[in-house]
Length: 266
Image 1 (cartoon, rainbow, N blue to C red):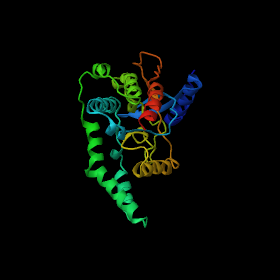
Image 2 (cartoon, helix red, strand yellow):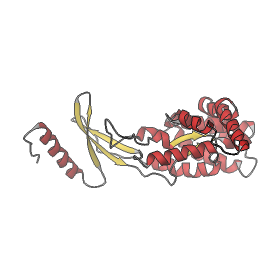
Image 3 (cartoon, one colour):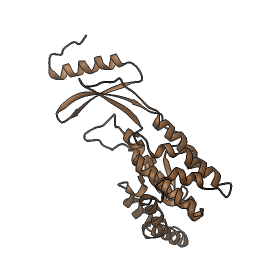
Image 4 (cartoon, rainbow, N blue to C red):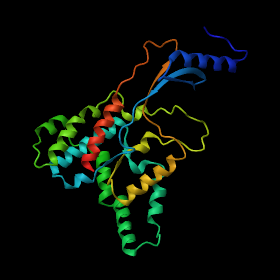
C-alpha cells in the first residue's frame, strides 16, 4: 500500500522506497525524467568479461594473404557497425595523448625518432590507413559464405577463421553492445565523467606499442577518480508497460567470445 507524502518531494521519495522494496534484491530502480515526465526505470547489470579493456588490435592483418585480409577487414568492420564500436582515436582525449607522446621527454634520441615515426604512421601513414580501412570497408556482402569457402593455410589461419565464424552472431544483434551503456549513477554536473563503454571497447592497431600503453595508462589514471560504465539492461515502467523485466545474455556472450578472439589476434 502506498503511503502519500506531505509534499510532492516526500511523496516521490516514499514511492521510490516502496518500489525499491517491492522489486527485491539484484534488481534496481531509478527515478528518471524525460520531457518533463517522471518515471521509474528498472535496471540490472550484466557481467563484465575477464579483460579490463576490450581493445581489438588489427596489426595481425598485415601478415594475412589478400583474400583472408579482406575477410578479416569485413568482419571487424561489420562488428564495429553492429555494436557501435569505434576506432580508439575517436575518444575526446586522444589528441592530447598524441601531443604528449610527441614531446621530447629527454629519452634516447633514437628512441624518440622511432616514436615520432610511429606517431606519423598513425596520423598519415600505414597504421592510419589500415585503421581507416577497417572503419570504412566491407568487401563481402555474404561474409558467412566467404568464411565457409575459404581454406585455411596454416596453424594461425584455422583458429582465426573458426573464431570469426563463431563471432558471426555478433554482427547482427538485436541490440549492439554499446546500446547497453546506461549510466545508472548519472549526475548533471559530475566532477569526473564515468568511463563510458566507448572508452573500454575499441579498435586499436597494436596491443603492445607505446601508443596503446599511453592509452591504457590514461584509462587507469582517470578511472581511479570515477567509475566504469558496464552493460546494463533497463525497463521503463509506465501505464503502457506490457511485459515484465526481461534480460538477455548478449553482453556475456559477446565478452566470452571477445576474450578468445582478442587473445588470438594479439
